[in-house]
Length: 249
Ligand SMILES: Nc1ncnc2c1ncn2[C@@H]1O[C@H](COP(=O)(O)OP(=O)(O)OP(=O)(O)O)[C@@H](O)[C@H]1O
Image 1 (cartoon, rainbow, N blue to C red):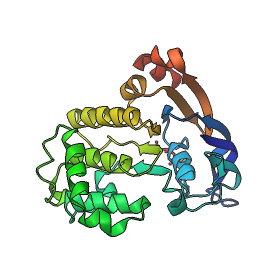
Image 2 (image 1 turned 135 degrees about the horizontal axis):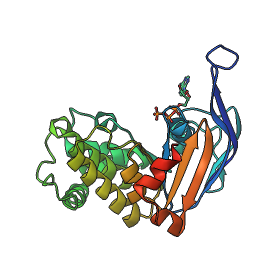
Image 3 (image 1 turned 180 degrees about the vertical axis):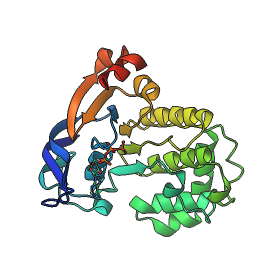
């Protein structure tokens, strides 16, 4: 479903601060895989997500999604496939707008039904129904500004918004780094459930090795812009937090 062939990205080419962020990477990601990416600071994890999302373009190489060559496609043209969750829960939502208006905006992002989504009572009850599945008691607060909610509540809603449109690929860039341990656990459980339920292909960057062991069907370790380890199947399922810790030498 996602194919990266010889993808290369250097920042500040020819300058003293030149850095090879992604070094000729080859990677195939199958539909429905949930990949966890770990790696030291500066190893290229976020750059890889940026290249997939299209907010930076590679110097060379090829990126395809569902057999479409997206290598030079800008970010907005890829949003029909890709949704992205950031570390900062404030990034995914419009704070002053109500919960329901945020869902309307999210639905408009990839669909063209505009006004019917906005005025439709059916849309409202669908949103309420979906929010109820989070078990956070937010379904009765949909007229409340989303900025009044906690980071964990916002992150859970952002996840839900991203799966309510047509997205197939979910990119999660340290989605729980700004959350307290309990909220982090809750948000990851919700993410895991939604990924299964909507059969998404997901790629999550995390520094939390416990989560890296617990979640995902495949784990990749990056180092200096390269893929150092790529483990899936039963080998991934049997990996313990300490095994992953040992990779960091
Ligand atoms: N826009 C940019 N301009 C210049 N250098 C960049 C840019 N983005 C990333 N880099 C550099 O590329 C390298 C890889 O950065 P990246 O953010 O992908 O690493 P990372 O593995 O996500 O790190 P972290 O774990 O600290 O978030 C780093 O040396 C970084 O300084």
